[in-house]
Structures are given as C-alpha cells and as structure tokens.
Length: 207
Length: 288
Length: 139
Image (cartoon, rainbow over all chains, first blue to last red; front, side, top):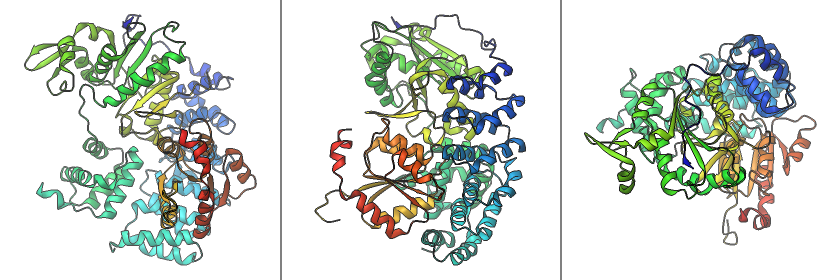
C-alpha cells in the first residue's frame, strides 16, 4: 500500500505496442460501442484512405463525442474534398451537426476558400449566417475581404449582422463607411443599428 | 517603467486585444488587469520589429500561431513552476476527488488495481513530486490504497531533470520545513534532492500529448493534471490533446486544468463539475 | 429597482457573437438586470455551476456546445436549474421551437428580437422567482 511504481518494467518509449491497423479501425467505425467508434476515428489520423468512410458517417453519427473525434481527424486534412464533404452539413436541421461542422471548417484555411462561393450563394440565409461565423475564426488573409463583401451584398439582415460581428475584431477606420451603408440599408433592424452605433466610436477614435 | 506609455493602448485597443486573446486561449483579462496586460504587451512590442500597437497587433493576428503568440502567452501567463503550485487543486484532490474515486471503484477494501494519477506535462518534476508529498503527508487512506503517480513530458531534457529531482531554494520555498527534513536531502550549492523513495515511486515517460498513437499507452487514469499547456496549442491540436486525455482516463475520472484555463474553448467532450475548490472536468460515465 | 426587490435578477446571455451579447447586455442592463455573458454553451454551463442565474437567454448556433445541448445540460443533473430559459435564434424552420421546448426552454424567439420585447419577456419571466427557493438555493 502507499505509493507504488508501475508494475511492469518501464518499456522503452520507442517500443510502443503496435496499434490496430487502419483496416481494423475502419471496421470499428460501425461498432455499436460509441467509445470504440470514437477511438477509431481518432486513431485514423494520417490514414487518408479512411477519409471517404468518415465523411460518409459525419451526417449519420448520432453520438456527439464520436462526431467530435471524426471532425478532429478530418479537419487535419484541410483538403477540398473534406471541406466540400463537410460544408453540405451546414444546412442540416441538426444544430449539433451544423455547428460542429462549422467549427471544423473554421480550422481549414487552405481548403475553405474553395467551398466559399457556393456557401455565399446558398439560398438558405442560415447557411450564410454560419458562413460568417466560420470566417470570424478562419485564419486567412482574405477573410476580412470576404466579410466586407457579405456586408455589402447580402440581402438578409441577419447575415449582414453576423458578418459585421465577424468583421469587428479586425475592423479599422477604413470600414466605417461600410458600416454606415449597412445601417442605411436596414433602417428597421434595431440590432444592426445598435451594433454599428456601438462600433463607430471605437473605429473613429472619438468617444 | 517610463516606457510603458510608449505604445499607449486605447480602451478600444484593449477591448479588441482582450477579445482576440480570449478567442485564441480562453483566458479572459478583466478591465482590472489592464495595467498588467499593458505592461506585458509593451514588452512584446519592444521585442518585436514593430513600433506601434496597431502594427504589432496586425502582425500577431496574421501570423496567429507563430512565435509572436507564443511570446505573448509566455508574457501573460506565469510559467514558473515550483513545488505545491496552485495548491488548491491538490486540496480538491485530497478532500473531494480521491474519496469520489474510491467510492466509484467500490471503496477502500474492494478497489481493484491502483489509483492512477498523471501529471502531463510534468516539466522538471515539481508537480508529480508535490502530488506524492501531499498524498504521503495528508491523505489518510495512503496506507490502505495503492497509488501510481506518472509524470510525462515531450521534452527529454526536463525529464532528465525530473529524474534527478534536485531543486533550488526558490522552487521548494513553499514546502513545509518538516517535509523538507523528511523527504529532501541538501546536495550542496543551495540545492535539495527529493529522496530515493519518492523518486522511484514516480514513473516518468516521454510523450507528445497530441500523438494519439503514443498516448494510447496511457490508460485508466483516475486523476489527470494537465495545467497550462493547452493554451499554447492551436484549435486542432488542443482538440486532439483533449481527445487523447479523454482516452487516457477512466470513465468518471477527473481532469484538472490550470486555474485560468477552461475546456469551454477547446472541446465539449468532458463534463464540467463544480467542487468547493473550483471547476474540474470529468470523463462522463455514460458510455462504457 | 425599487427597495421591494433587494437583489436584481441575474441574467446570463449566451451567444457566440460578441455584438449580440453586447446588445442584450445593454438592453437588459438598462432595464435593471444584472447581466453576465457566455460565448458558447459550455461557458454557460461552467458559469451556471459557479452561481445560479434567474434567467438564461440562449442562442442556438454556437461552437463547442450549441444552444439545445446547452439547455439540456442546464436542465440535466450537470447543473439542474429550474430557472426560465429563453432561446433566441435566426432559425425559423418548422420544428425548431419544438426542439427548444423539448430541450427544456420556456420560450423560443426568432431574431431579430425588438429590444422592448426582450425586456418585457425577461421582466415577466423573472417576476416570480419562487422556484429559486425550491431548487437552486439548495445547490
């Protein structure tokens, strides 16, 4: 009793027990035990052959923790295939799915621009609101420019306010006119008016 | 000192900076910390090629995970490690977490296998040895339960120091004198070495917390301390690290983060639990 | 607030958009509420574990933990609050309100919500805080 050292002699760090093969992990993506599915998805990092199988399960996986681990593995690829495969779920009726997918896309700066045009043209304004959310976190030099375009061009006030929210952390005096124009386009939206009015003093440097 | 005003952060600058830093790290600076934050930012700007806050901040945002952010985090978080640091979490471990762990595993008489505690990153060893000291001196069940303490770090140099376990005055200044006499030996030049009994009871490992395959050898931990490291990672790395910690823990196991850290910016897979001593995270027991 | 109400009602505004939090904070703050903010569902759960609130105003689409999951966690044993919860969303598809009520929300509003409406709703929902004596105070 008391403090004890780990029983087995300490294994050399290089001689790690061989993990299950990608093939086995792939078959476990359908295991009834969510913990095994979660571990499989996590273990499939660096196994590009598993991408199509995981993409196919993103829309049907019901356990939020398994979904998280699949997205953690998938987002690391940052390829157009993955971005395209994830972006379709932004229109999902499942809030957990569409927000988890948005968070994953926000970590994919190389490939997200490829799916952006279709998202900006999505007929569902909620998809465009989610797109603004993604651009808020996307580490991409053009993110600011895309948000400016959304603020100028999107016809829906909720999309414009979402894009303004995403833009403000990086906004400068150059964006003042853009905000004034947005306020003028939607004079009846109290939130948009408040947001612009609250942001202006900070940007112009006047109290 | 005189140069603190050089960069002259406006209130708007401070708000934008605080929002950015919060988003990147989950660490929130209230307006009351303004003086502290201004001074540290000023240091970062003076160490950078930029003259103004605006130029420096723009470069920081563009480079994002680069060395600029690293330096900023180093400046804004206290990195120094020493014995019994953030001691209230060890209080929580003794008063609430260990009794819960024992109860969940069938009670003192019936527990099968040791209680397993992981310190990751363990750096030069102060944390795992602090855990050992507090268990030996203050946990009334230590003579009735086996406890395994593991320390792990990615850096082999700090692990070598952890194995040697000799520390300067500053590092041990919070250790009570009686404990010093009992568990440390003066080895000259103002340094004190942890005794062989404790050193040999702590198992050290080299591991990268983001490496899922390597982390697979960590299993069934009841308590994990992962303090002040996830804030250094980008979004995907911190998510993967959280997933790997989850896999290393027993269902119902407890995870302590640094006192200013929160899982809420990293991953939803853990369940937050309020203890009298503060917030802790649990791997849910629901599945398996 | 008058002397009849010794403590101001505490509201937690949960939204990933900083501007929305600021807007709701300003509206409710001016109306006399004590407002705190959380930027996603998990932050809200962590905040609620610290101190219980008298009212939660929760967005739907948020990263890390969405609004429905947040409301479920607030109602589950993780937090176990009986306080009123208002969900506010940009979504106005059929079935969304049902989903909110099933999660445990007391009211579902669609954005944009006029300021006076939010204040009236908040005032109404916090007028009777007797539920607090039954449950949250014990926690």
